[in-house]
Image (cartoon, rainbow, N blue to C red; front, side, top):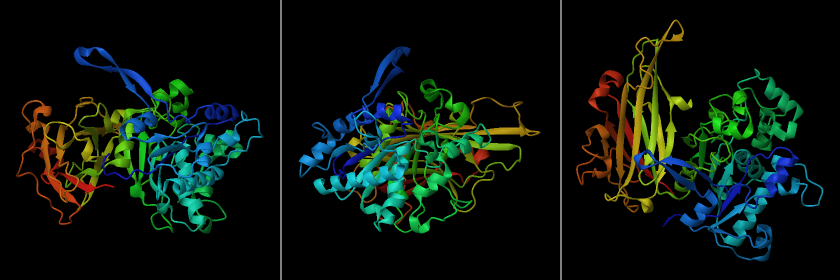
Length: 504
């Protein structure tokens, strides 16, 4: 993408398990980052058609012109070249030293050592490329290796991680550890006690040890209120959470096909291995996609994951939408939920979806939020060089559904219920000006119920659109009225707050 800073990208893979798993991993030249997927989509006339995702490695090579420099091995290449271009992709091959296939004595895997070795790789890449920082892209446990570097290794050295790492993108990382719905805590205690295959790294004791700087670590272990997901902004050398993006998977079934019955233990609110509530850092950017933890239909192998990754790393617009000013029924027997989907023009996939069928709908507080309170609905990133369509704008669509559930005597009541039928259902079509040099982007927002004909034929008004409500030069804010049909549901003051800010 033109104008975006091209920093080196370092990929950090996830947990391999026992020795056999490690030996299998090291046989892959790119540790799995090169794996894509194929599946059938429904095309015109309800006929099945082939769909192929080439892998994030190849797509970054094709779309962003990143280079893959190996020539017999990336360590050999780095050792034999004094300079390298910054727009390159590298793999942190931390499992190589723990494999039995190299003819040397395997080194016991330790997460802190992997983080220390990651720093050595980063320093070599920075020195030879001249790049000030690198982007880290991590799957599963790899995100914890990156966080160990950011939250412990660098602070212990008295170094600011923001000077070393540009952005961190995680696929299905167990930021809150791995917990189970089954077993009443016994499975976690057994795992942490026995350390089978090194899986205790996903328990609170070990996580506290490798995520906490030495100067702040209590000798008795984690405090009762310690949250392993937190990247506390008030700690010394805190890494900015706005530079972190967490992709959360919501499909446990595809993971079970390849890995047994893990979802039965982890629970349905998961990607098959990591529970939804454990898969993100509070305060970071988050997107939910209906993909499993790994495998052919996993997060890393998905177009959904790649498009979020690409726009987070190289986009130039950050867009947000929130529900504000709503006043829902305060009846004690009624629960309100919102479902959202985000579609970006030109993509064949939905980049974000929170659905009740996927166990991740947005719970709306009864009575609404007081004062300036808001319920975040979605945030995403756009790039002016990727605009498509005849209007020449960056267009995205926010599909919003509001549903209510009623209880009677503690049980759901279906007397007046219509399954999967929303009390409100509409799509907000948003057009953002694509001029990256404009201090305030032109913007238009129209509900689909007000659009006549196909959305693709709709052209945003050239003038007289929503005005900017924020006086700051680099922030655009406007409140969009909801259709009049929502007044009996959300109240007269309900609005969708749209925000657009520049993104580096």
